[in-house]
Image 1 (cartoon, rainbow, N blue to C red):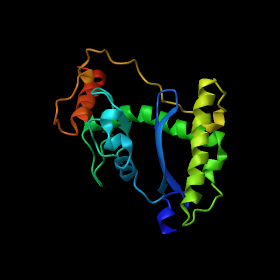
Image 2: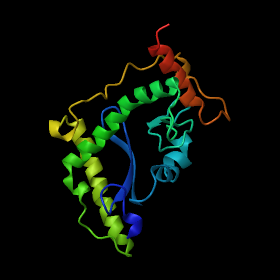
Image 3: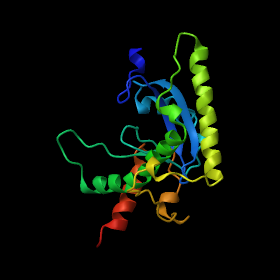
Image 4: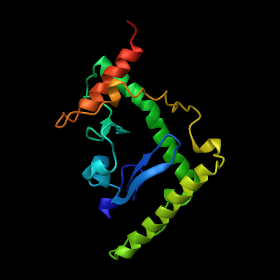
Length: 206
């Protein structure tokens, strides 16, 4: 039982969710105990273990500072305890927050459509079927969530924050520096550094 004691809601299951710009869930990994760290779940996902099957050389995910930086995962810079981070990193985190809001909205809509996800009244026992039954129902909610988005289902305002800053800017040009493949063996932070430089060049007036 202590393993399932989460950080916020008592006993819980942790779920890794990846969404697109339409708030569709395009990948998720559920079933981990609530005490599991986000990065631990990510490191055990197929996304992390077999990235070549999910990403081209110019594709990557955006995540918060809980995730370790990789060529296919660009995470926010961590703020040192009791200290400030450099201005370029702060601006990067500010820009990254906008699409991350969309991720929060995706999860909020998913739970809003299926309140069962907020309070799963099904016990987890030593029988593996007990957890499998929960995961099968979660599979169904993800399928229905994506189906309703495709159908243009109306989303009540109460399900998402009023201050929606999740709009994403225009796509980068194919000739942009950020769309170039990384060199084999490049440091894990290379893609994030590219994005940091791009954001600062774009937003800081000369």
